[in-house]
Amino acid sequence: MPDSMSEQLRQDMVCEGLLECFHGLKELDKECFRALVETGEPLTVDELAEAVDRERSTAYRAVQRLLQAGFIQKEQVNYDQGGYYHVYRPTDPAQIADDMQRMLNEWYAKMGQLIQEFEDKYEREDAAAPSVEG
Image 1: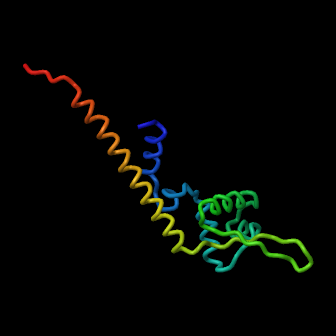
Image 2: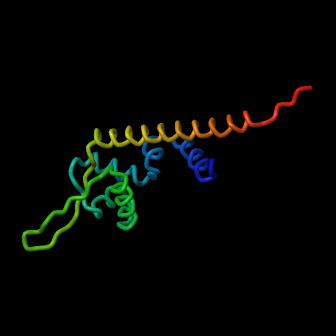
């Protein structure tokens, strides 16, 4: 198994919760997601930064990670006089859970394939090795 794969497996085995395991999300990312869920309405990055008591740029990076992971959605709000701004809202938890289940199924299938490849490789080498009888 390549070093990168074994390192990834080690990281996967030490994760503490679903958000870390599936998406590598940080504590701040979870705080931002929680804030969005608890407010019950879409927030701007500035409002979210205030809710988690962080700088705007720090909150923005958390928002980007949450967007990439599919935990939140971005919506554009247009001003009547022109221009717009963005707000963010949590994705439906059922959709998030479905995505995590799909990821788990894909991971399980990949691990099964790797185990089979391991078994095939070393079974052949074992069968090809000369036996020593004494």
